[in-house]
Image 1 (cartoon, helix red, strand yellow):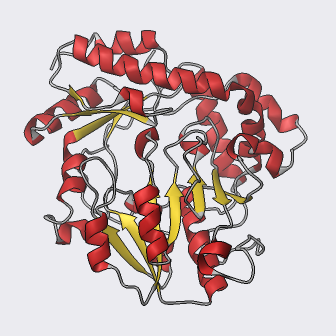
Image 2: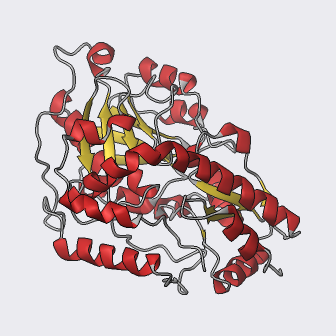
Length: 384
């Protein structure tokens, strides 16, 4: 049986539609370390939009710049591109940390600045230097933990906001969690802490407060079909697609009811899910090397808590394309990441690290619907 691109819900999860829905705080308890404010959205792209709107309303500033790492998904920026803000793509270093020297040189202190830091692929980074930079220039700090399944002691120590995306890791229709740590009160000496009070968000008409029942039903049908053993493939997926306008993951704002119900059922299994993802990541590494492919392991397996994807490198671009499309034909659960913002191509020297990583890395799914046996079986067929 071929491996799916995302994890599959257990049949018992579907019976949750008869459950009484719990309070939001109870549903996301695994992600709440402290008595922080929070809000639930369909995806982190909406969380990011909400953060900017809240800062704009709280500080009464319209002259806003948001600093985004250049190694980032363009699709996640669609919502905020509708805002009247300046988006600055800062270069990352080879170890996926921000090039703070470049940021300091190019900072515009006359603006209200927001700095987004990403915990890539489940690695947990030390934010002390980033925090010192943000504190020095009174910059709001967002910790993007969309690639992190569950909180760790290190996440949230410095950030004003924390973004999680359980829908990227778990078999739920949609779902993102925004945590507001309320540090803004001390950092900016405001009379009151930043809290989430306005429950409505004004987005363009293509985004709805209501979730499409048709799309949810369609998602359920697809998952049931996959549980029965049928597979859906994506033969037209390109390794390096032409830049175009990407659509946001979901066309609604709030987390759906079905995702909340599923999350509550999944919560007791999160520890085992985490262990399975780690094992699968290690299995990909061991079996790909065992089969003597042209793929080089560049993961620091001991450095992440729970991996988002397993990733490998092929430095030869021509060979990369050959390997990618050959594995796709073999129905490997393989992908490329991210869909880089088109602005990066205007200065390829500045963004050389991000572009280089995008062109030389392959990513394999590690979700808990995969087993070590599945990985062993599929990698045994490799003949590159």
